[in-house]
Image (cartoon, rainbow, N blue to C red; front, side):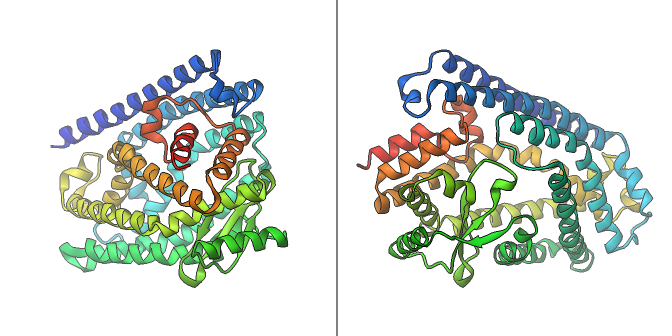
Length: 416
């Protein structure tokens, strides 16, 4: 059985790598082809020099994606089949009585060690690739500080949460996964409220929108759209990146609207209204609870599968663990490392649902601000972010959570 498991995992790893690489190569070929003779539609959005930079930016990111795919695959293979994970487990002790806290510390330690080889790639992306195209605003000190803060928060949240799940496994028998799901789902809801208040300020500064006229204008729009928010805040995203975004956090009386400072600088008041109306559309159309419900179903299914694997000796034994001398830690860690090999193939379905939501939010925004403002905002953001306007259809279908610019424009124009 162990040999079948190893062969299956190797096939899944290879299949994902081949498909990821193929999509990147398809996308690069499509971008190069369109870049040779851009159609008039593209030049209405970007001038020729800006479009050439967007082509270079897309190709540079895809080359990095190709390298990251092969590099990450080698790391995963080494982690799974070198004997490192069983060795690290023995370092923390051995036997079924290893202890809840030590089992969780084993999982967190392994995850931290496994993430270390990715740091050079992240550094290159931030300080070479993004810097080359003018998007990086971070410093090395800030980047390192962010990593340390992320580690502290990860340990502060991850160790107690994993410990609680392991405690439930050890005490509640075969149906522990139902209780674990309830705990994790409640935790997810609580974090929706606490994240902007307790965690986000560790990394970014949130301040009230200082432009009084703009603030009143946006609040009036929110009132017309039936979105009661306590405040509109601006986040200093520009200290890390030139990219821009907008979102709302929390729910109920904790709801707040957040705009990147780069977004406020880049868009006109009319365009900001359109972007805000789009974000409100996600709320009014019920996209957040729908995605929460989908996430809950997938999480419940994943925990059920994990419950089966924890009781299957062949699962951990295939990767060098002694089932009789192992607690639940190795199975939890292996499940976390391997689940992406399966969920990766769900990306097109999840992307399809996400793009459907984006179309619905665009229509909602158009009802309150008109299609022109939304189109102008999308075009301007595409220019500022050097967005890829000509992705390969397979690439966008597999990866894109948003429709392409021209797909969104056609949908908006069909309403007018």
